[in-house]
Image (cartoon, rainbow, N blue to C red):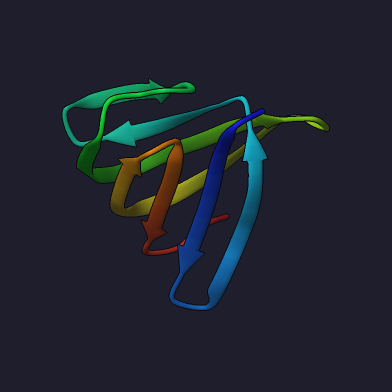
Length: 82
């Protein structure tokens, strides 16, 4: 796994680790990020954020935010996460 995901909320870092994929609730629709994804910055809507790592699939609800994908690193700044 060469894809790194970091999820940050106003309360602090929620997740920081390697993943095989991440699915995000973009403002223009849900999209998935895989290894070697093109660079992107997108706003996020309220909705499900999920990722797959060695332990399996994890899914959470976020209340919006911003995501940046660059050089196999996904950085999510979420307003809140449940």
